[in-house]
Image (tube, rainbow over all chains, first blue to last red):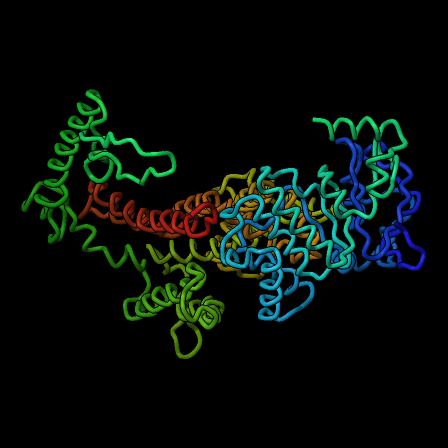
Length: 250
Length: 371
């Protein structure tokens, strides 16, 4: 849990967001400390994805404060790109660049954002591709890989920027059951390295195994948060109980 | 047909060859030409029609055709097929217009260098591409000096002597080369978040698309003088090239905009998430994908532009079509319109067909799907 002696890398304070007139995030307060692994769950449309997309400003909040690595996210931010490059993101639909090879997908940002020499960037990319166990696919194009392999490339691509925080937006929701495991294994290994992770997922097994904290959201609010053990065994809120009974008993 | 009727235990079934007659030449003929009784009849009928056409055409085109004669009656004395003599006698004009005979090596050299300059742009995998690209950048100046002259002891040639296929290539290649970058900028401008940039792009595109090309050419040849300060003498050929460029850039912009809009939103989100700036995203993510999708549309526009260069006849420039009409007006060759226009058609077809084949090749090369 939130230990006092650890540095907070994300601070969200009374944050609100609207899509048009629809109030999608309501009074969000969240602090994430360095190395913490957080799983966010909740019914669809509850604002989970929007919340983590606000953290790297793919979505813009209208009220309240978000600070990431000590930098306040606001409209007059000059170096948004450098803040974004410290926060890695993995998407539900992988979003690999289909016209670039696996290796080029991984080296693009290190070369152009981090200004790394091409050779060093390629070595770095191969190192991470080995970590996600697909170095042999480096020369292929994303369209030639399976969904699980593509998602692992996407993880490697994000890691190549050496981010301090990793955001996962339903990383296994678009995958076949057989492939979910290979992606989750990669994420578990990543968690073991001490990476700060925010994961939106319905994989409760993953939550039990690696999460330090589970957050339940519904209708734009954080309803309940607790350690996985207490969250799954003694949920306090009725909506949490209903949600858990629906996803665990089928 | 003998099928292997053997039963295999589960998991031990080997890969068997396909049944005979379903693959190879026999299989192809069977599937495509003789798949049913009616298809077989159609195939035979088509072959017969093709035979009639070739037999009749061949005698007019080749067997009874006359290549060597000094005028039309001379042709008719020898044979009653096509009188290609009109093309042979005026061939130089069809290619060079009225460019002085002694200086034509300059056109030949420029044309030859054009291929060297275009190669690294058209074939990304070519050897020594980087050094060749430097030449590509210098080429427009080299070609301008060679063709127009005026420096290095080269005789100045007035542009009103330009004509024939050389004029088509000059207008076509210059307009194509200039309209692609301009079209890309207009497409990006139309998608821009900057309101003024967007407004200007939309106005330009809609105006250029909303006006017939002929009107623009007339504006170029006559009205532009009223807008320019008195005394400025602005070459007609350059005016035509500018108008052609603007016209096709507007079309290219819309084609590329379609390509940009076909890119999934996730691509931009991924580019944002790894920290790329707008221009980096445009250069590495948006344009490579948008241009690839737009290749058929872009080449379509270019082929259209290339053929539209014949419209310059109306404002007095003599492209191959103009030269052809001049030949027909000559009493010696009166009435040989079939031969003349066929030849002009062939000149254009060669270039347009080459563009079309190149675009197919490029599409295939850039394809990154399952293969």
